[in-house]
Length: 597
Image (cartoon, rainbow, N blue to C red; front, side, top):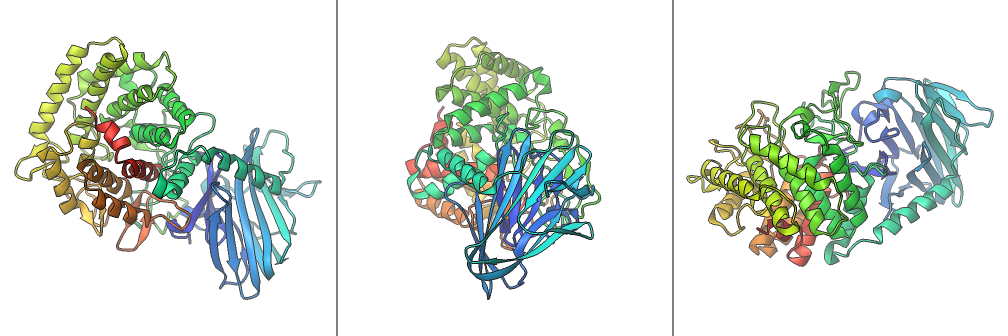
């Protein structure tokens, strides 16, 4: 059985990411990319679906872990009655090779250790052919995949697993290196685990040293930025929403989605986080990825794309995996990629406007694409859509979607006025006014004193907190203040916000949804705009307390069971944390900048 989500740490190489449990088991790894099929899939099944365990034999061993400095090199110490041992894990990359290295070091006494390597390609289904090479390394091959394993301890085959036992005394080290490459290429040279660890630590720490300080909350901010960087593909610049698929929003339920893709919805939050953190090159790479992904006929704009900008993200189920704690089905691909969501037009235009304001080097393709998108939106902004939360039911006129359509026209007008690009600004001003008037008339309920999820409904939705953040209305407008109060009153559970109300217009969501962490950070941002700084700090600190012991957050938090739920680590949660920290630290930042009208 897999560990609790918060009991995982991650290691990554900006191509893929592995989940390492407190128990020393790597239960999730896709090779060579985030969206490739997993070779360790115990996270969504059992150990027979693939994992790599290194741990003391003694069942009572207690573990503590931390990252080595500001890096993704993970150190886990196990204390037993006979001694203390440490495991150091890291992921690296070479030309067309992925290296996973693990070093076991004795710190005191003597500890009997065990290792179990279960390799299963294609999400735990395919058992590879195992053999021993002339150089002593083990080789595992199935179809296009090959893994070569180098070990300083003796290993043997046992019931379709590779196992071993060994003692580690104080001062001793045992090294393991697992290298993936395509099976039809030359076998790579063995990796040097110590050299890999040193290179990885230096590379990550040099990157983190560029951070623009944020005073009080520098440590959670730098860890969140490191996580965001680790979720960024080094070649394409695409940033995946999470490293996993099918970790449930409700444990045991069916809302299990594949998040190993790049969402346009994250775009503005991402570029603000990178710019405020001082990472301009990464902001440029993200801007360029957006331009490539969205290029083409505006009618074909999707809400998400693959890491390289791929558009076909066909969703299918993986029936041989039982799901995380029985949460079925396990899904690969994402059908929501075919949905109409009007908000992505606003996110894209807002992101490109922010990039211009930040002084990112211009790209000749930027304005022609933006202009084409706005001209297309002018023809269809009044259509119903599936909304920010990707409702898989009847389309509706979601208030947030219409507001983000307003943002698209507003930013296009600003670009004409401020940067001298050519466009029918007068026509866009007319449409912007129409949308604003319609939202205020049909998206606002005077009886509730609040904006609502969709036209004609009485359902509250945390996405309404974005209205003042994007500049649709001033934060002190009575309708905004009333909306914030209504959201606090009706969506707050155990000190955190739900995305929307249960059971009414919410895709028949059963009671028990977890608090959506990004939404609670948006409430922090609203408090900052309203000058409620004590409330903002209190809520922010409460949210920080949900980070696991190595500073990571999933998508949601279930306060009743006291555990994280949803895919992990979640970029949206960490982006929101970063931006709220800068808002609080400077009483400005993304919230103030984005809300300027």
